[in-house]
Length: 443
Image 1 (cartoon, rainbow, N blue to C red):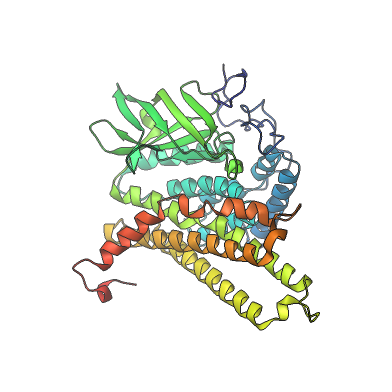
Image 2 (spheres, rainbow, N blue to C red):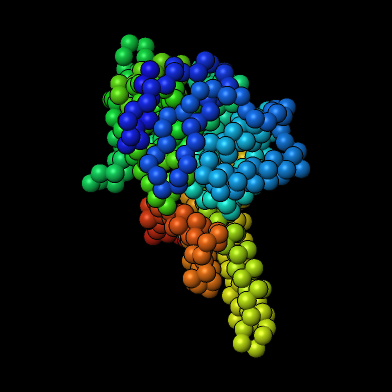
């Protein structure tokens, strides 16, 4: 069966799809960062590390596994071998955080903070790779906690999907099927009924974690009906074409690609019809987590600033870190960073508080709006802080081995992804300028 990954080179044929719940295939290594996109994944290989027991991670275990994963990412980037990083990722319990964290008594408190720690640590090495993993966390956290208590059929489908992901230790890509055309917020794919099944046709501009994932979850409108979530096998699927890199330079390591659905067959069991609450819930998780890898990049920038100011001396032979102006500037940056992290955690806690409770549209609207505010503040903060640090360090930020070069290139993407900041700002503007008194808002 031919590969469904288009990489600008000669097509390569691969073996058929992995058996259900099998160990994931090992992706082919990409040897040069600016080179052509990687080819399709190679043959199956078991994880190189032992798999720990499933279930809630103790705080120490989470920190230890996150630190190990972050170190593996640094090594993988230095050796230009990202597939090695994903093998380590799969060998930890971290890919299952969004799916199994609340399985003991259905207590999900702390799931956002756990994902935050992993994503921020990864972002401190590469915001682009953190962005790829963020997509997996956002879609699995929202999927596992969809408000489906009053919809037993959909809940059963969701539970079966969650079990398959956990048993197979799959990574999950997702797309809203938006496209770059002459009109904003345009969708490029539709679904039509085909007996008891569905056929997906069209394209999407964005699909991160594209070649490392086993399945894709797509947000698509059914012709003449509402939107639904469709789940399909991604790897070696001739009905889904994964195209070239969308960002072939600065964000190449996010593995974001265009994707085309070619009359893709999806069974009814792999479709979840969604309503307004579920749509807001899914988007809110994405918004609440989106800024985190970039805040990790900002944290790394501040640490590089600390090292620079402590090691470089002024003409009076005192370290720059002892200059009053530098102390004040660093303090202001740290306060902004802490504020951005605080509203991110507040947004995550608001989502956790709604898990398992009866769905009330007003509560979901408030959680969604807070998540959007966290995304706007976090991404703007990350971009601004990295820019300020780069200006202070100067040309040394781009010398060999200096992490600020990668951090600078990748953090520029922060305000551009997710729900656009311009959309968020206008939605808040309408709230402020509407008929209700500003003091009536619960902020």
